[in-house]
Length: 82
Image (cartoon, rainbow, N blue to C red):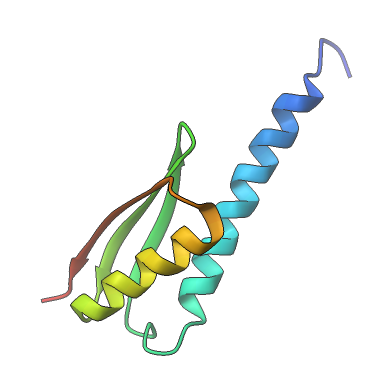
């Protein structure tokens, strides 16, 4: 390999990706979220929840799940499915 490898930067990137995957998996495997279509996107340390969920309760639950994993860095943009 040529060039300089910033191992700290790689670790942070892998960690953020892992957190996004953990959030997405936790939401997907939660009872009542079977019809939700939610994507987790990270930007500058903030995790955005985007997509659709069947009810307002499901939207709130997705936000709670994400916050329990990532802390306060959550922006919930999930909309109710029509």
